[in-house]
Image (cartoon, rainbow, N blue to C red; front, top):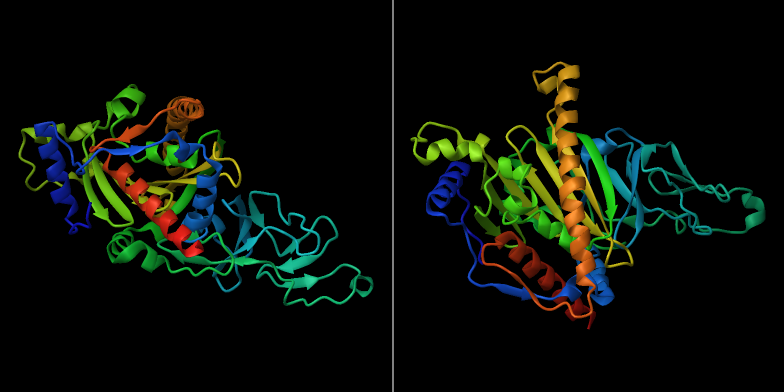
Length: 395
């Protein structure tokens, strides 16, 4: 696959209509083999934590989740437990969630607001910029370099309404460079920074993170895994795809577009008839729906290749920009959220749990990604590239 020229949304939708008429889809050149060790090998899991998440930016939150100064959230990254905190100057910083005295967690709540970060063990305290504020009974403790003993900071950047982190202290972060000119421009065209994360929730599952990510790049399974939900609305195995090197986007047509298989579409805005998906390496799937966005992220467990955390976010226009009163706005997005949760918990998660259990079979054999699984092929291609580069640099 090579990087392609950007096409207008309307052109890509018209190509999807051609696929529907012809019973085709975008494809890559070859079937790609892979093995069950991808989802169970502790050494591969280490390489992913170090050479992927410890090297490149990944999304950890929408900006509105820490909207005001001193707002914080905590999460388990693949390499570190962290605290993400909005600063007084409006910037965002991320710190390892660990007191520099004896290693106690500073904060166990998932989110909240704090004036200082205070250790529950001996009450050492830190300012929200990570600097050491006070040592309890410091006159008896001994000399401490307060600058040296501030919280360990991880590279963090806010861009396109998201907070991005590289999970390694001392690493560099440049989100625009990582996205590349094409994908950075695509995201800049969306009102993501003006929207709000009206719902955000995480789920710890006994499933490798790549198995999770693969499921949400795949339009091949919809008819079979979601016959009574998504398959009623979205066509199976029909995709128009654009490869931007590390990232990609693709369109999946909704069944409501079928009227234009025979009817002239000239003069019609066809965007309301499709879902547009953006895969942002390493672990984020951003779905553009006609009236909102959904962000799905997948992070590996810090030690167990058979575990991961999925986070789902519903990103929508603010109530004052929606032309709805607050009660109707809340009802609309509550309903959307409940539908998303039902599909996850009743269909996706049970299937993926059983798949992961099968990966641990002693005689599990080689498997395949098809030519039609184009986004999955890009994901695995780029994952392998990052690991190869990391191992080569490691020597």
